[in-house]
Image (cartoon, rainbow, N blue to C red; front, side, top):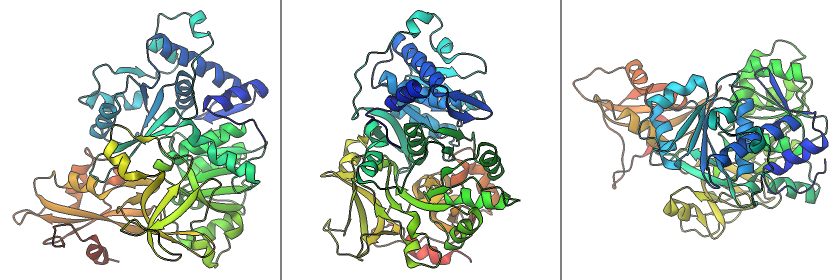
Length: 515
């Protein structure tokens, strides 16, 4: 499919609203919205934000599941030169508080089901305007009830460039606090342009495609995938929250032809499949975001009967940057263990502890040079400087390149644990565990999980005069951290192994995980 070069996130919406206004753009929770209607409703909301004095660059937050409103708000931000801050609805109120305070949001759009989370949040920005998205009530009316239809229908005349910020996604932090990765409009288009320029069909779109948005927008993969579908002008079908049976129902009902998922989603769909027609409409499935068992991938290839491609990227990349194309998905082949080849415009290198480039096959830190890279970590110049060096992004992932240039990701230098595509850093969980009065210290590591890819395993040193149990610790954590961060298993030990400087030796803990 060939379309004009898009520079901002609003460009493809305006293009398709002009050329195929009546085509359904988004489907979610039984509701549909055409490209024409989405263009008009997002323009009205953008004009409403401008009319109440929300200036370009202002952060606008959203707390809720996938919905039609999500995309109306995103495109309104793109048109008004403001920056959308999507908040993971699974987060605890204290974590939501941190994000609101850190980004300094002027407006928070929130689904009614999460309003209590906001009410419990403390130290939110003093000027924060909370808009509850009530059914049947216009967002524009809630935001600015006194603005007339004539004002809302005026053409927006703001100069927006491809390098301007459009979304701020929060990543888990190694110190226990998430960082806001600021992404520019270009993050959504540069890879697509490169693929088209070189005639590579690894990530392709057809005019009759229907895309399933399985990964939430608050993840870079979800935001990027949704924008690829909009750029192609296809119908995009979303789920408020992913479930295997719901995904299969939508695949059948809407004849879904392509999607991007994490391995845990593949597992759930296979578990819920009860007939041969479940996946008949699929032509290509993309996966990534977490390790995948070869046995699961082989079963998916056999059962789903379509092409598969693996994608690799991280929030700071702003997009996917590596792809293992369908041609390399041959069960039993050594190539299937690879992560893939760099996409057009992306360069890879592997560096050692001293920062020097390593030879092929040598394991070191993966570094990326990509036109989609983030602008910065919001309000964290030191962290930005440590991560972005001379145009290269240090990923914190360990891996190597083979002689043909294929990337293999072998470990994660920063001890990141990925649970069903959700990032969990040990420090977050350890800090929460140590808040319990009966816990002396704790260390968490990732353990292999057939369903979720990985799960959290906690080693806990408890006070000698207590008999605190795993169930009690889980109950304690439920109000402090998101459910996917809570350990699935615990082991009580007398002390944690440390090196001479006091750093916990996680490599000595991993072999102690019971089989």
